[in-house]
Amino acid sequence: MAPDAAAPLVRYERDGPIALLTIDHPPVNVLSAGVLAALTDALDRAREDLGARVVVLAGAAERAFAAGANIREIAPMGPAEARLHGGRGQATTRAIERLPLPVIAAVHGSCLGGGCEIALACDFVIASEEAVFGQPEINLGVMPGWGGTRRLPRRIGTARARSWILTGRPVPAREALAQGLLHQVVPRGELLATAVALGRELAQKPATALAAAKYAILNAADPGLDDGLGYELALWAELFGTPDQKAGMAAFLEKRSMVSAPRVPWGTVADRFPYPPEPGPPGADGTPPSTREKRKT
Image (cartoon, rainbow, N blue to C red; front, side, top):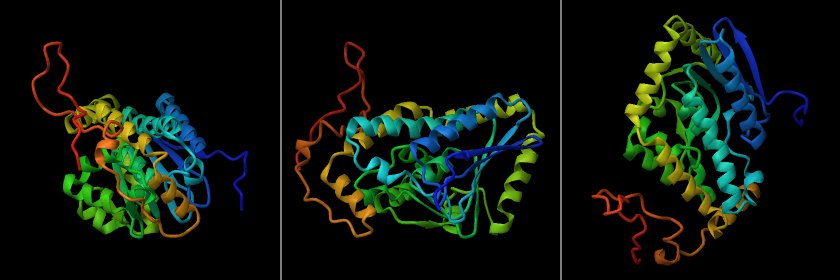
């Protein structure tokens, strides 16, 4: 059944001090450009709603918190369009982090790709027992582009994040809890009540101190976040238009296995996929060391 065009893509309700934001884009809460815009608007509303002290973010779809980006929407994109769309996704995750309220994600079902990146930006993630997390973008010929390469290592460590991102495998809730991604795992029927109960506990704390503490922790965990997001977005956008991106997303839409393109000499693409800035003294003009040293395969 097609969603009602008049229905909000993200519902905003308030239960005392709790602002409940519910993504409502059936059947699996795909994160289209419209959903990202609606979620950002709802976060702005929570910021301005002085009666709200905590945000709980949930999904209305039966099978998913959020199943990721709209592949049909992004598959035809080239690098320039991808950069704009990736910027929307990053702006949404940054809006969650910059909100001066604690944000609790109540996750059930699929929480993959962009959905996982949305959850990673939240202060707490509570999941139901059947929830499944993952960053499967590699199977589409791309990589996480909404902050996943930055926030996932921060949450679970670089070695585990490398496994998630380079294999693209799904990770059950109990495993994600053991790795440090989740705050708690509960039965599906208790999910929203558990998230709201944590929200009510947080709502009793001084609001300004909560905001200051949230920002201080984020800065301590990743003081270079914005630079890192810019680097991630540049790489993500450049993957659009590559043979593997086109093949991977076509295979996904056609429900078949992807066949990877032959490897090309790295020197032919190195300028488009620069290495991270290398440590070292700045040059005489104050510029950092070169980030584009080419290495031959």
